[in-house]
Image (cartoon, rainbow, N blue to C red; front, side, top):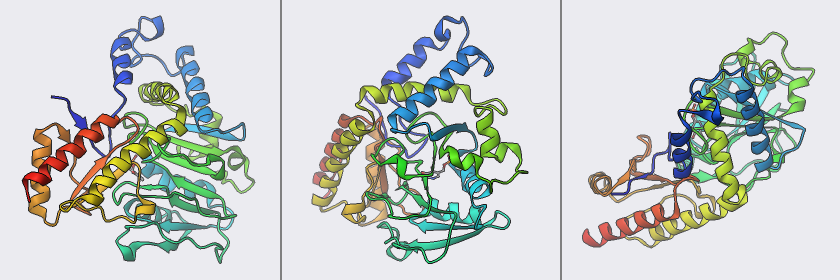
Amino acid sequence: MTIYNFAAGPAVLPKPVLEQVQKELLDYDHSGMSILEISHRSQLFTDLYADTKARLKQLMNLGDDYDVLFLQGGATLQFTMVPLNIATKHHRAAYIDSGHWSVRAIEEAGKVPGVQADIVATSKASGYTEIPQFPDVLKDTYDYLHITTNNTIEGTAYQQLPQTTTPLVADMSSNFLGQQYDFTKFDLIYAGAQKNLAPAGLTIVVLKKQLLTDPNHPKNLPAMLDYTALANKDSALNTPPVFQIYMANLVLQWLETQGGVAGIAQLNQKKAALLYNFLDSSKLFNNPVKPAQRSLMNVPFLTPDKATDAKVIQAATAAGFLNLKGHRSVGGLRASIYNAMPFTGVEKLVNFLMDFEAQHQ
Ligand SMILES: *Cc1c(COP(=O)(O)O)cnc(C)c1O
């Protein structure tokens, strides 16, 4: 039986990448050593690091004015590091609240001494089934405006970015390199790798170099929390996650074969449309999200009652469609269909759901 993994994260990785990892696990690049054993100070790794950074910037169409950091601590640590490093002139940061992960980011920013984190728009009243209307003009002066481009739990995503003159910061964890944006519109983007790029244990931070030399950059931050200190040491202030960076490199190479971000985003549109079209035509299943703001990556859906939800999940699991249980805060089901989920996986899931519906009316 073919297994399809619809988990929200850690999530499915491209099969050809996993096969390559298996093939070269005992001997990386003719070194006689496993990638799991090599030193982060070796030429093997420094070459790999430079190559990974170059590929990522190329895929994002970013020039020399951007730097990339490969860190640990997850997207969650960035909830703290972002305000600590860049809410340093006005000491105020604006947040758009679009769901669970935005709320977590706001909470953590508010804990940073001397920083005020303001919610400037929220879609809480709708149960986060849409992206908030964002204010054209922020009435106060802020160091940055923070958005969550894809709301992993609620299944919404920004299709248009806010028009703002305030520096834009994004938690892009769950649609990083899965949806096309003009990445030059952002001053800083962060993403936990385990949704769309690599195994857990790696966090990507893409930021304008100008932020690293800003006169307001604090001088006395703990080094491991300091973007400038980390950038100066090519993210290797301590031992970096070598294996995760290696896997990110392979996934980026795979992405190049898929036509880059534009190519994969087109396929993701097709995958998502197939599933949403089915859900919209179904009498049993329902997706509550405003159609224009639906996520390409995470598709939550419900039946009219919890018992039926549980029955679908049980039958799906038995048929090889795994990890379809919705997040505990919203219930129901959720299919995460990241870059590495093949079109056939979504097609087979839709057929399964269709059959289930036919047998249960
Ligand atoms: C998963 C997720 C996080 C948390 O990521 P960690 O890397 O586990 O800290 C934060 N934001 C979004 C949008 C996510 O999907």
